[in-house]
Image (cartoon, rainbow, N blue to C red; front, side, top):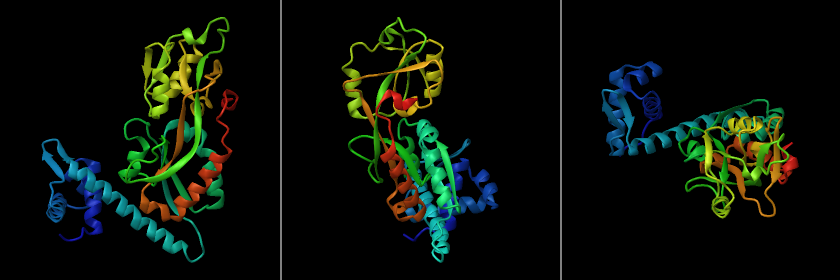
Length: 301
């Protein structure tokens, strides 16, 4: 086996991204035959078929998905090396910083963090991608090399295998319901729900509540849930970070004495832990996590 060259890694990334050899060649300014030859060379070096070829283009095999994930991380590491070597002369922290975050964290946690970060390091260029926190979620974006750091929901087990990181804070869930129905027990209203990752404790708590009905409505986005609640369509059980963006017409009631909670933290690939840009971001996140006041319904207002 021979090592893959940097240009071969970029070709693998382009073929996976474009889902075809011709489109990848166009994006790279190469010929289709050169891209095909390079992919075959990579497959020979790695000893595995990386792409299924067909009328609908090229789709990565399981081995190909793993190879491309490593390729992205290696290419990103070389980019980070170039930026940090240049910055070593004067201690500057520069370059792009790719962040994957679920919507409520991006809306209510990151703005203040990035404001402080870019004030201290004006040469940084943060890029934030909103990723639904279901399935592999933001951690999957990091593992696949699409993000340098992910804001993720973490249970007691911590980051997924192969990644590193830590919890920033725990936030309780609360009952969100229409504000203009004071004579109605909000627990008797229809349930509006959406999919998200939650910890084992949250699932256990939910299973033990016989008052929670089956979902009447299920939507993909938590902001849509809040809009529906504001119109009096039902209630929902939501984390406080989401409820920080509750519109007028939504009331928040504690689920005391033992509300379900979810951990919010960050994850990154081990090789990113030494990046000056990522370390600077982690410092700001830890500072924000220490100051977070998500412990009561009043904190959502």
